[in-house]
Amino acid sequence: MPRHATPGRSRPHDPRRTHVSHAARDPHLPSVHLRPPANWINDPNGLCYHDGHYHVFHQYNPHGPEHSNIHWGHFRSTDLVSWEQLPVALAPSPGGEDADGCFSGNAVSHRGRLIAFYSAYRSDRWYQPVAAAHSSDGGITWDKQPALAISAPPAGTTMYRDPYVWHEDDRWRMLVGASLTGDRGAALLYESAELETWRYLGPFLSEDNSPMPGDGGWTGWECPQFATFGDRAALIVSLWDAVSGPSSVRAYVGTEHHGAFQAASHHRLDHGPDFYAPALLRAPDGRWLLWAWSPEARDAAWSAQAGWAGILTLPREISLTEDGRVAQQPAREVANQRTRHTVHATGHSAAATDLGPVGSTFDLTARLRPQAGTAAGLRLVTAADATEYLDITIDTEAGELVVDRNRASLDTRAHKGRYAVPLYDAAAEDGTVELRAVVDASIVEIFLSSGQALTLRWYPTAGPAGRLHTVGSGHYTVDVWELQPQLPASQSQPATSQTDPPGRCPAVS
Image: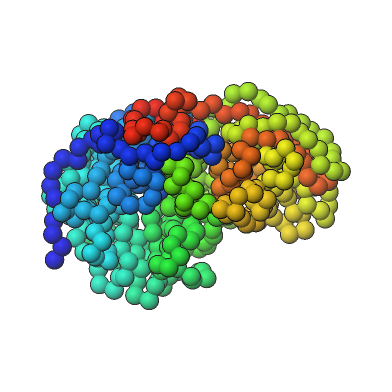
């Protein structure tokens, strides 16, 4: 039988003991996306609203830019724009159930306390039991509970981790990501009256009872998330493979009947290559907000040299469309961080048109109407000789928005690729497509007006600032605003000293 978790208080992390890799200033470090100034982060965890603050926890290695020694980092905000970095919330307990890492989970606000549920990782077992910790001071200090919330997985599972807890109809419910024997992804359902004793009810949804099993190619489901929208709901799962690691994110849309989810449709949540492990937060005004992890798309040695790895996406508002899709747009607070209006251009181009300079961090809106039967769009040119660029085009023949980063970096250590988003109902009757793109150094998040999204990373050797051009033939209206970072310049890059100070962090706006 697994031993109980080591009891005791999780002490705030001492920033004086944090190791930061010695690195020169990295132009690819974002300034408006949420992440610590240095070292490794991955999955957002424990998203909740408590005592007037939005809380975003995340997987964090405070000692280096690689996935190891995982803690829970912690940020909070009153407005989703300015964020405060708090001390590390959860740290592994030597000899305890989480001795090798406090892995993914979530948190809830209940009776004046924050209660975190997380995956207790030990390298000597294949599953990750569910552990719990309580905080009565807004997440500054934490008391780990002496007994595991769930000590062992049910029979017939071969992967087990990542609890997600929520309150519904006078009871608490929990989903845990899993794989059933034979690499069949599943989200397992538990219930509790008081957040302490949990009763297993069986698979909430699995590849077995889904009428749309998908195309396979993964070991199991990670990080299940559940959001209700009236009489419909969305189950979001991250597809993980034991050999290749994170794959993509899938959303199932349907209804629940007698403790089982009946999916009427499913689709890929984000069409880019660099989006994984999203987590949900129910805002006080009823909105569902979502953050995800955007991993590096460059050689690991390059990230190690830079001294940091991983970004959290901007917060997104999600909703359900009538045809059963999860639609995403940047949270409305993003517009609050716009400053100087640097580009306003409208016209018709038959060839490339220079619309003007853009910085390394900006918010762009565009209305594009390509000439019938052609492809047209925008090109972000970063090199003076135009040898580096990122293309965002509308392909009217294929009915897709296409993002091509094959020429986005001359450095061979940067990942390449061409990615497409189906337009669905994004194109108006006259062929006009509205889109929004938020660019922040090495991350690009693109949203169609119909709610589809595409997230990717890019690493131009000339630096992320450059000029905006049109490509192809058609009509365009483009506006660009600079975005104001919230992190002081002295803290916005990995330092050469051995510190990783708490304080203000990059704004998520």
